[in-house]
Length: 162
Image (cartoon, rainbow, N blue to C red; front, side, top):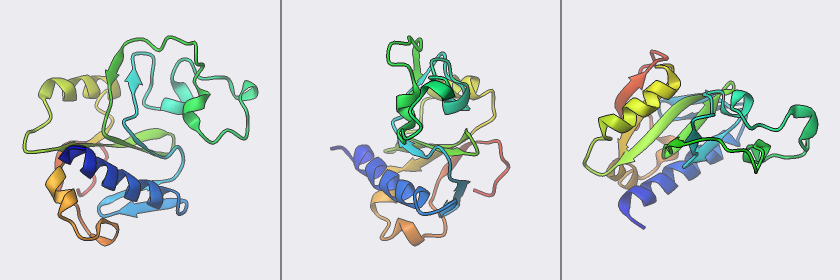
């Protein structure tokens, strides 16, 4: 497992644990209200929407899906062609139905502008994207209690102090 994968896994586990702990979640400067969760490597296709589990095409209608299903990815019709794969962020955090944070882990190189442009076009500028160096995660002794994670702001639509 390379450095980016290790850092991604560490950060994902901490964010996911926090997301499952209550209605409101916070790790360092990132805060959100729990609803659809925190995902690692969540794919976004042409037919998807930033309200991923509500307005993407191919979602099984509410009255047809199993109410006990807690894996929201099972809400997509398995035989539905969602179109071209556009991007797969390292970590995606939902807040009130929509994607709030996209976190990208890097190892010394910035995320290519072409990848960021595809994501920005998809979200129409209404998203938050932060780039985090893998070493800043791997060298942190306790991410769960840290006040701020060093992150490069790519897009900050919400106007937060990151």
